[in-house]
Image (cartoon, rainbow, N blue to C red; front, side, top):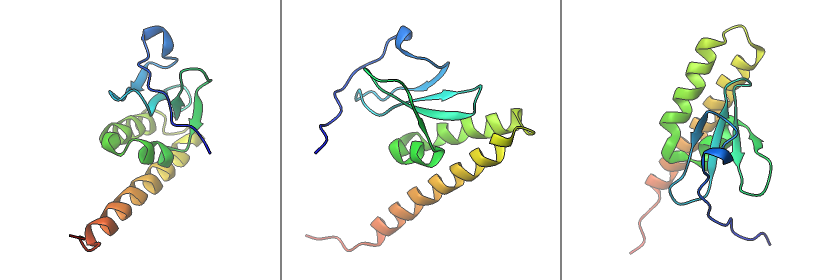
Length: 112
């Protein structure tokens, strides 16, 4: 059984990328590597972990707007990069998964 993530609040020297989404709860931090067009999960005592963009959306659904913005801007600025199509597909899959999850949850009967 895995242990829960220990909260931490990274300082400027802890952030390997210029674009970061820092969760105020101290967990599930994300970084976006603008050179690669890829999201990374940030950990306190481990190297950043590359994420499928859909997993970034599932990890931080409250920041889906910023994840979409970072992705779309990167694709716009790198139209000939092979990663552009992959990033777009990953983003679409992640947003679809979140929308379907919440749509299904909204249709579930309320237990009282």
